[in-house]
Length: 386
Image (cartoon, rainbow, N blue to C red; front, side, top):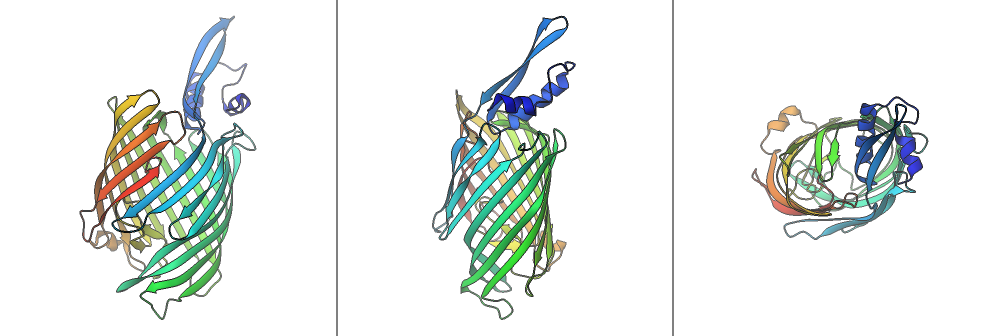
């Protein structure tokens, strides 16, 4: 972490009136940076009513791999590997990429520099070539399609203040659907290629406070996307969702973590609905894209407890409940209360944590469904589930 970058980012400047609120904000902001595992300040009297302010920073190692594995029942193992530097050039720039194999090859390259132009303005650039097996659901059955998405994205980043920031930009992408097997429908093509533009807006309110593996506070992130498509099969559509996160420290070793997601999109009666019920995204153990909808209501709640903490190493256990329900394509919000759409999956897991490597959390979770036609499964990954 470059000292010049820290001075550029900090609100406290030489010659200002001593302000403890600014120092609290600065250290809280520093602890959110990928390159910082912990930060605190000290104030020492100098002379003639002047003071020295010290920001003490424990740095993270930030050039790290990412690994995700997932499977359910007798399905093949899929994996995703990547390498990222989350503090590129010592200036909190995230730069790296990934490769994924889930029967098909995918890759992505990402660059995010939130303070590239000033301590408020930055940019994010992303390219992705994604291919996966996607089930599409019809009345009475489903079909498997090879889905490809090639995209180029540019976002402008703006930090209004300590807790509020915005992102706005464009994404140009090409989607391809290629029929493999399953149910066919004369109204649904077996091959479809679509060129689309997406306008993307993100508003984030971040009131989280970090102390190594523990988190306390509230965070809300709103995502809005408007997608245009010049074809006769799909209409232009709007999609939006909000993630509400609430964390509470319990005692010396406990942490209660919650995520509530509510999302809505244009309600076209189409098998290409945007919200999916997926093992790796929202409900642990449910399977790989088992259903789709045009609205979603999802709650993830878990209790995390530190079992072992020795120096840099932490073993954390957790017990969770993942629950969700969906609106069927072309349906209404009463679908939320349809037992066929509800999923409830309690489970348990373990976290192996390195306190001085950014996001160095290896997780393993086992979810067991208790609702209608439920499954069960294990999910591996890097980082907390949410």
